[in-house]
Amino acid sequence: MKTVLVVEDDAAIAELMRGILEDEGYCVLAAADGLAALEQLRRQRSDLIIADLMMPAMDGRDLRRALEAIPAFRGIPVVLMTAASQITAEDRQLFAAVLQKPFDLDDVVALAARLVA
Image (cartoon, rainbow, N blue to C red; front, side, top):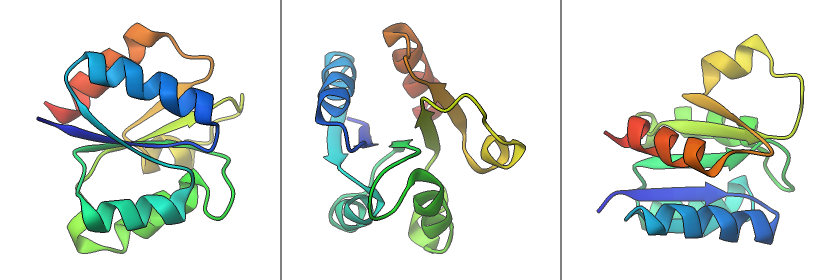
């Protein structure tokens, strides 16, 4: 079973993502910020990370950069989830994909399937 780590500080959105992905057969882990995500990954590696851009303690960009500095985590695809309207060219290069909020549930499923295949 493939594992997805959802990194989101909004509990309602995190639970929505969990429900969508579990219904598709994924094991879903959750963390409220980037620091908690790194701790979670040390306990259990994930096949995909979906991370919010704006979070306390460590945001999505800083999490992505931290993952690149840890050889065991470099190959994990990371999706940036954001409500921000301005996505930078650096974001598009840094992340495997960008999931714009509000998102379509079918897009989440398709994105996960494509990135963990």
